[in-house]
Length: 115
Picture 1 (cartoon, rainbow, N blue to C red):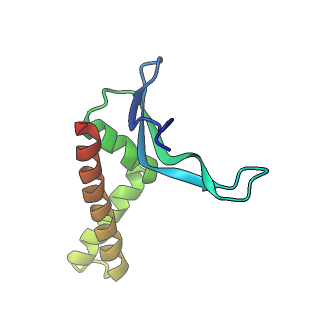
Picture 2: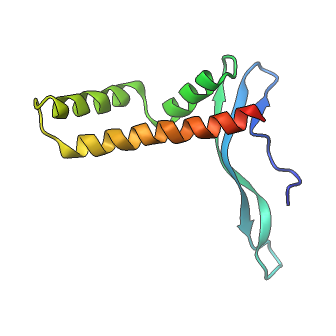
């Protein structure tokens, strides 16, 4: 059911835009039926108010997941561990997860915004 599938990037009348990630069919059993069918769409959605460039969309998505203070804490905890100031193995893993998230997001944005 591709009919009604939401756009990945959609401009609103107020000058803002919506960016949708991971658009997938939403399955369910409609009332009065017995078989599971697609009942709509589900996705992760963010709204931005500046120009919808790759950099701006990336910033909005990242800030919807982690705020600036928490991001700095990740970096600082990692640096403290690397420099031997405060040993914290979990800081390394958390920072690696964050960096992988940003790499994965880059790949998705390149594909989504080039279409």
